[in-house]
Image (cartoon, rainbow, N blue to C red; front, side):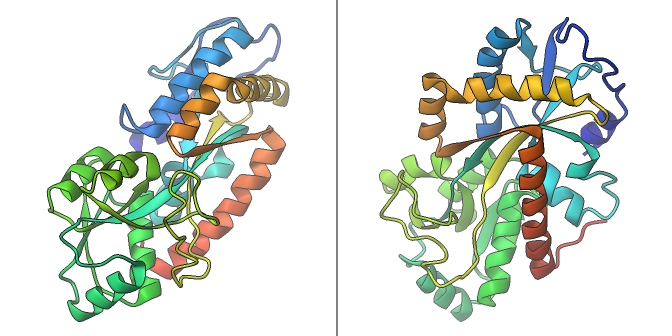
Length: 298
């Protein structure tokens, strides 16, 4: 959070002349090795060729972009009372991706469907523990949404990132976890974890055997981890459109398409105007979810 707030204080770009005339930096406010980090590295390699300047992940110095996500730019401003920023604070640049999420349980949990999980949770109020990548992250909201919609009690165990949460699930410290399909499917395939449902609108090609949460009886339970690029407020539209075109070119490459597919991510290319509309729609959806979960953090 402090890093994002500090980023807001950076000098804005004042002129679109001869852009870009020096290296561009892309800040990814999430742990290294996760889907956003991998996506950023894939995109920057391709964008550098199109723009004629290298794009680096480094400390911001005023010539910087931000990889926004569901957790950082959609959820956090809604649940942190003093966040001081929101998606509208930034200038939209380009859409990047939408990633499938899956509800997974430890194999020691004697359930094979979401309905059976709900029955078990009702029979043992508060005994089941669900993990998350941290307070205010997408898995946290998904866990609370399941609790609210199913009228069940589970204990929240926040970890410092999705990786540690996965380790906790594999070790049985927690029994329930929502996370990206790419992170969970290898363990589901080898039997170390059990997948119950995906949170997308339709079944995922990566795991067509898994029903959606909607099919599992939770109408409207559709969530996704989205990633998009934004710039400092006031960045000229001509510069943002040029950057957006570079992102679109990167997303169209076979290498990026293949890598995204293996991560369970769908490319969501969008112009600055299209991204603004898309994010506004996502804001409304998450505002309703936050209202349902009643999460608020000082």
